[in-house]
Image (cartoon, rainbow, N blue to C red):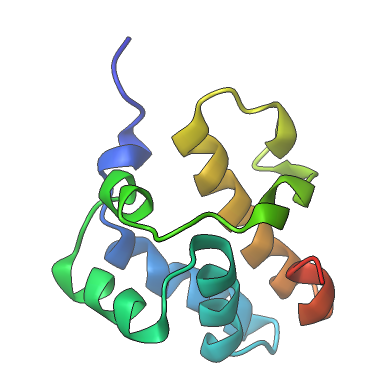
Amino acid sequence: MPEHGIFSTKFSSVYPLYVQKAERKGRTRAEVDQAILWLTGYSEAQLQQQLQRECDFKTFFANAPALHPNSSLIKGVVCGVRVEEVQDPLMRKIRYLDKLIDELAKGKPLEKVLRQ
């Protein structure tokens, strides 16, 4: 079965869309970054390196230091798909990230978005 197209999509091309979505709803780039750092374990400098390298989603998540242990608490529907039911591990990580950005954009407090 061929890989889903999002796996080879450059993370750096989607990142500005995440930021735009959040900023349209009064959130900040810093909050988007905080959600990404929480999920992936990257430091701010490491995130900037990944953006400069223009890696794809597959590489972005493969290089991530560690998925947050509470990421399994991310539940709900994104793009019509229930996050917790996604079978492919990489697609689930991408959906986790999508869900975090959605929750930010919907005005959920950052502490709740980050499952704290």
